[in-house]
Length: 107
Image (cartoon, rainbow, N blue to C red; front, side, top):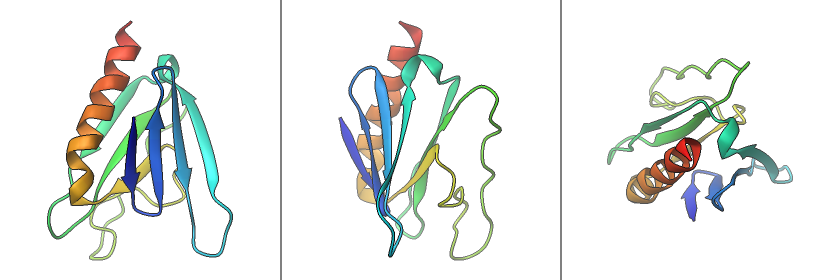
């Protein structure tokens, strides 16, 4: 299962969550998390005007706060390795991915 985001993507294979981020002028960076290690998830759906985000919470790491301002639109910063901004067209896929991760956490 894959969700395309802003400058990246999130994939989930049933056990591992992989967040791939591409910054302009840099090589793609990949962050992997086991679903069993995730203590919580956050999904802020995108609107037609602002991007939303998916975020995975892990023990020992405080969730990145939402950046304020017109350009940030209430999302965590791009440097946060456990979140990814999503466009409006990815809302449905992101909700399914979050549900699958929550189900895997409970198993």
